[in-house]
Image (cartoon, rainbow, N blue to C red):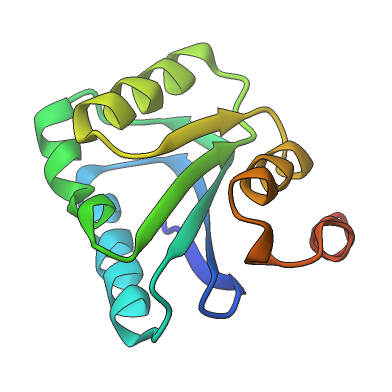
Length: 137
């Protein structure tokens, strides 16, 4: 399944939308897109917010997943916040990956909670109400 990667806030916040059954190959393609966006930005810090609402499965090969997520060590990456999945196995795997990769990672139940968390960490990401309104339509 393909993933969507877009600027949620230009040069401040990248949003990924992950759906279906993930493979390492799809994760590598997504990684290349994220790296391209990071490289093209003049910002010093860019946060990543990941919508896992529609993900069904993830690879269990943590070594290859770690390699597919090398973008997490890009010097411009700030916080990585996922949200949306109620699948405890996926939440557990993403949590383990966050620790293995030694990155600033947090999982939140919903988009509003994810944005609220990010705003507590970095108030410069924009107006909370506008982001929530734009994404609840």
